[in-house]
Amino acid sequence: MRDQLRTGGLSEAVIDDAVLILSELLSNACKHGRPLGDALAGDGDVRAAWQVDTRGRLIVEVTDGGGPTRPAPMTPSVTAHGGRGLNIITALADDWGVRDDARGEVTVWVVVHKDVRGPGTRDRRDAFATRVMAPSVPEMADLDFADAFDDMD
Image 1 (cartoon, rainbow, N blue to C red):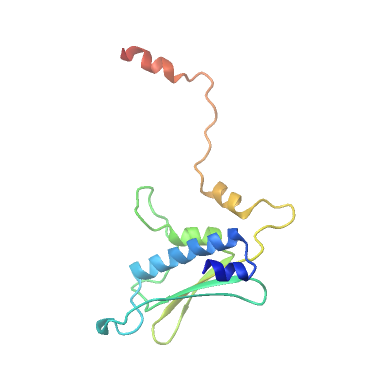
Image 2 (image 1 turned 45 degrees about the vertical axis):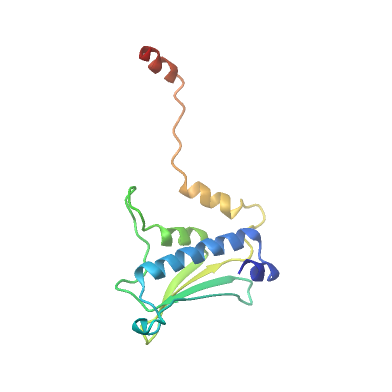
């Protein structure tokens, strides 16, 4: 995938985002979706695809056989072991959505722009890191941890 996208002129940052997005989509399809085809016959699977459209946008798609719920971002607790995938995708992508077909197949598609930097803007990756970092804590000038350990001798 990486080599094909590089030859298409995509930057490493866009390719990295696309690989992470594809990983999240495939994980969600395997965890929440039914396989395509006849799973009892052993040919159940999911389908992944990507393309660069005429406007230079990278579109990544994963299709599965549908599931008990529709893909939607969650608000997991701090201790939850999952539930963050679509929030990550939302932060990295320009757009995403879900497409259903008559057979019950569900495709989650994601648009990642080719041009991740614009004049006078910060790198998209820096902006993402800022959104997901813990809040800053103001300095406490009088706090000295060394004093707390003096009594431990």
